[in-house]
Length: 364
Ligand code: ADP
Image (tube, rainbow, N blue to C red; front, top):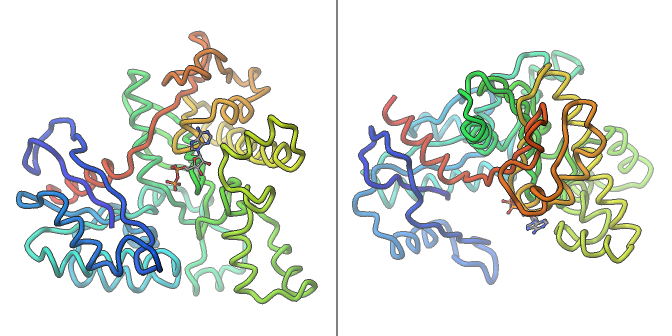
């Protein structure tokens, strides 16, 4: 469960929200984890922070399918609809449902809101979400691009417009969320028009342990020729691929260290990772026609000057340049003043955005 609350205001307040406390309860239900189950986890939260004047709880739900285009106040019907979406996100939605059930049980008088990772991307045009497969199969099994990390992309695109001193509605941004999971998004006037993750968070950019884009034949080949069961292929592409698969390490800091020592696998992984980003940036520039900014965020995006520099290398003819000293210093704006396309680094804050979306859902 993730949540946040807004300080110093009622639900209708317009002050800038601030984070009062932050915490993480990990590996719930696992041996050696922080809590035995979700009930125990929420009890820990209730003991460690004062929840007496709580206005609402915001739940991050990974998959909202084609149904939820905005954060939604939770009732029994909403829970049933999220349950119906479990086949689309079997690894993610059940955990969110446990969090919701426990929070509704322990705090029955507090309104609860579901904030979906997919919602921001429901503005993408049909041609951007339709896979060119048998249309009847696709319709029968809800197969299409959904996209994820929507809360983060929405938040950093808005923050980018503010940094540039432009109205969000007139600003085009390519946002690059590079954490353990990674995705790119083209945001036109505050609306998502393209994103790299697809039906699941497995496609698109190279990630810590996920492959990103692949020819589907890789899967048939691993099954038919290598004899791997389908579950094993899914596990491999989800947990033993990406940086992990290429080097045995999923942490970009480790890859960078090995690369500096001349390790060939780390050098290749770094290059594959950055090139994939460059390919998406190029394609999103083409889709947008003009981007005012490219923004890096999340663990790698916020902290790796070398990935930022390598990802956008050689694009000066497209108006994209990085100022090396700004980049290594970790400024918010890392392009030279005269650059046509601004390059920014904006720390994401998904919990704060979930709190803001929760507030909006309750006042609307
Ligand atoms: P999550 O997607 O789990 O929220 P984060 O956004 O925190 O993760 O990203 C975590 C990743 O960020 C780490 O696995 C690591 O690869 C990368 N990272 C963190 N700090 C640095 C750094 N200083 N340099 C390069 N990469 C970093």
